[in-house]
Image (tube, rainbow, N blue to C red; front, side, top):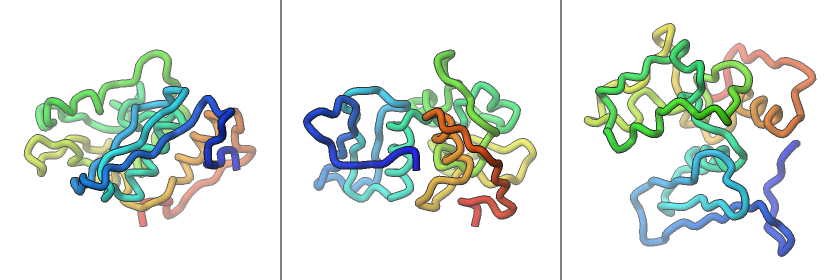
Length: 171
């Protein structure tokens, strides 16, 4: 593999610190979006799911949200009026320093589901183009597309193309 998660040493300058609060059972956890460098923290509730932790680990490796790609409006409709306003930044198009890698990955662990951060919990915030595609995943694993993006990010472009007929994360 390209990346290995190993215990930090005294010589490491770019590392991730996991800091989960044993008194927080709310289920949420977070990390800065994109690799920050130096020490980056993934933390929050001790009840955070494995899928969410993998999502946050994706950020520390340099991945942004799929719905923040410059080409996202070709693949999803963002229905801004349905969002919990303080969460709007989670749907902003990434800045000019980011690079879209590979194809839009509807099932990515880095893609939010259709109701994520809905102001009322039930209104659609993201809908696919074409309609009916599954958005995001609850599966605790990276999709083939996620792994392809990570490989490209670390200058290990895949030498072959894998086409999922039953895409990872959609089972």
